[in-house]
Length: 367
Ligand SMILES: Cc1cc2nc3c(=O)[nH]c(=O)nc-3n(C[C@H](O)[C@H](O)[C@H](O)COP(=O)(O)O)c2cc1C
Image (cartoon, rainbow, N blue to C red; front, side):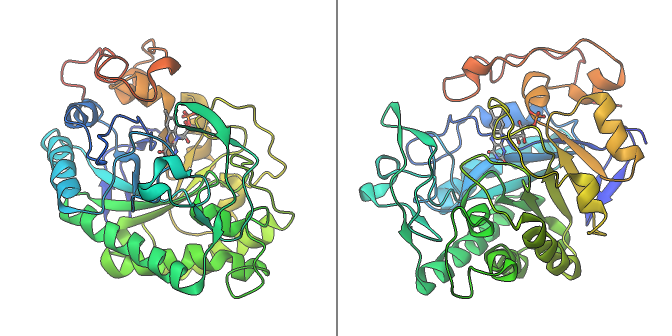
């Protein structure tokens, strides 16, 4: 199956199967306003069949680092509208990735030095970059029922704002050890109420967020990202296959636009060695889920074509290669040389490593 063939993910019609993976660039203002250079950055990459935005915080308490853009007020909507307009003017499509990091935050990153929240009062053993250095995580406050319901409402409210800002849909960030993933995993969720304990209870928060979001955004414009094999942010669970089977079973009738699965072997932003215990890859997903699947993580042209040929995925997301190659579809389809991603400019800074990766193709479009 060619990457350069059209497909539909729900009501998102993609002219090709190249997806730009969500990538935090940590360049937003202190008020979580997307930077003025973002429209140009995303427009450069509009030849993707679909762009997934960088993670966008649904609340000021949901950030895990500096420079994360938000979507909880009108100023944020106005900023993102410039981005969606730029992508649409260039013929592209873009969905907003909705993000809350849960316990993977730090008092120094949020208003009033608030304690981060999570399913249970269990700290991540990872380090976090806060107050200019790498520090230990603090023990989060375990959410009570009211806090859980408030957060679910915030996902829905932010989804509404994303549509107001002109996004073509939303992707719920359920991956990489952040809030939704924390509920899925026993290493962060030791609850014994209806939000933890059995696999069905661990899957409940993810499903309730999805149900609340699709009240605001059509299910066929809503996706969910999952990383069922990753240990990033201290995720572990002996019952993972059961938890994800339960989740996929209950997602099926909700008819989402897509489920986006991180393949084993690449964790976080790809900088850490992979230590996955489980192999819950797109092939495993395909055998349990009949809806549309995006596969991500470490893809080359060959691996992307393999998951499409095998029928394990309908589209393939590229992260670092899209960051470094604005015209990635054109380059891959013509076997042109690829620019190397420069890690030093991934997060923070200005236009260097952001707007200045060269394109080979005049208008950055794959025709
Ligand atoms: C700079 C950078 C920032 C990232 N930020 C996010 C993010 O905001 N949300 C997310 O789900 N994944 C994020 N990721 C993970 C990517 O979406 C992708 O899964 C990962 O890079 C592996 O794909 P690749 O091998 O094609 O780069 C980030 C990756 C990079 C390199």
